[in-house]
Image (cartoon, rainbow, N blue to C red; front, side, top):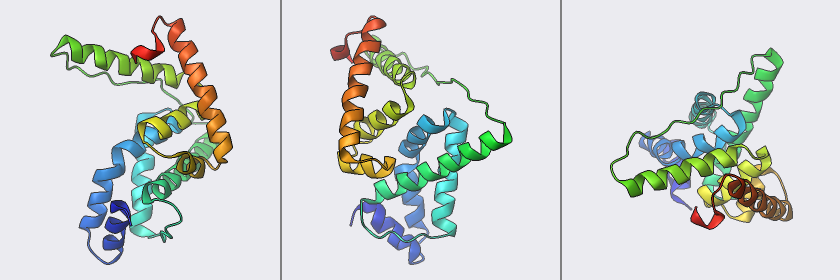
Length: 184
């Protein structure tokens, strides 16, 4: 049983520190992932809160068919999709193209590293939604092919194809902007 599953089990048994550990461990990564769906950091943050509220209030059963992180991200994905559907129905869809930049420019090297990360994230955000999601889950969250497939409700072969095509598209876009793929 992984740490997330242990923390969740402790929470279900009445230890509130288990939920605090889950929030601390998974909040940031889940928010960045859900941002690929919502295209708005504040909305993604709301969806993350709704995800943890669902765990705390409804206490869904974790069966252990996959890792806890995969299960949690799947719940978050479903909440984000439901939010998007509700927003579209209300015609309140206002999507911001927003990226917070770090003010820390202590050393030139740190600045260059951050600049590359920003360029990489901006470039990824210009890609098809499916490519954004598969790249984020696979490379930034270190999910396996199977876990990524489970979260996105695709087959392993589809994930392999998405990753292949996403890498090709990313390389092409970066080269058009004057960056060499290997530099990042």
